[in-house]
Image 1 (cartoon, helix red, strand yellow):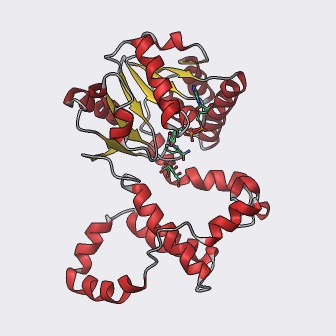
Image 2: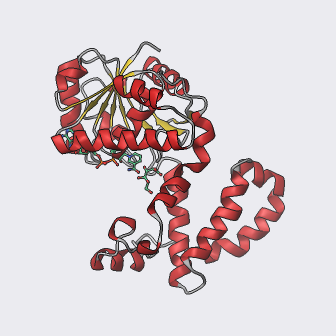
Length: 311
Ligand SMILES: NC(=O)c1ccc[n+]([C@@H]2O[C@H](COP(=O)([O-])OP(=O)(O)OC[C@H]3O[C@@H](n4cnc5c(N)ncnc54)[C@H](O)[C@@H]3O)[C@@H](O)[C@H]2O)c1
Ligand SMILES: O=C(O)[C@@H](O)[C@@H](O)[C@H](O)[C@@H](O)CO
């Protein structure tokens, strides 16, 4: 500990990353770029704490102490004495490049910059920063302050020292780190997710089943099984002979389209784009938003007991 952490970007990821770092006793600076953004960030952080307090995982004193460790500001000079900057601005290479120039200007070229990008290649981002040896990606998952996995993606010029410092910090934050030695689109988890999304939409479009039944299958088989054993432990447990027989039957029938599917295109054209629009694969007007937020966090509550919360 003792490090001062900065998070550049006051959106969804910035607010939750700041909840995690300050909730573990780190002084944290969040850089935004609008007044509304700053108050939205503060409100998201308070909502995160209130959810933890409602579960009796934190107290009002923890919330106050953690919020006291946080500076949320539009003033980039607040970055000056930080040791490491998590970049969490919009998923746009040009915006990220502008932000890297500002960080280097304020902090010097030895500052460690960690991008939270979901999809931009590490080599592309590394080209946009003055000192690529001090740059890598650490891709988190929502809800970022609670879900433990972080995919660390290095590129050819990332120094060992940078990698070690970032991994040490992530481990101190009780993160489970997986490492990619080079960038591939979607890293690991979004590759798995896209394969499942594509197949699920295909099955619905073929009239084979419904969104609700796909989600039941995921929750009560895939989710529950792989919560306690690994996917590849399971593969070995079944054995290669049976998996070969199943693959010979299933591979030829799997969806392999390279195009965006009709359901998604029609949804976008008609404004039925998902939860925020009230309608997507589900009718969200029929769903309870608080219950969904609770269910989204529920698997991770136990992990919060390991936080080193300030008091
Ligand atoms: N939302 C997710 O599920 C998720 C998960 C993991 C990683 N990520 C990645 O995290 C990053 C941030 O995503 P998000 O979901 O928080 O987006 P967001 O839109 O909620 O937040 C991005 C923030 O960046 C700010 N911003 C834009 N230009 C800026 C600038 N020049 N200076 C300062 N701030 C600027 C925006 O105002 C906004 O507050 C992206 O790279 C995204 O791919 C997102
Ligand atoms: O699952 C997540 O939280 C991340 O992988 C994100 O990067 C990504 O944007 C997804 O939410 C989109 O499915």
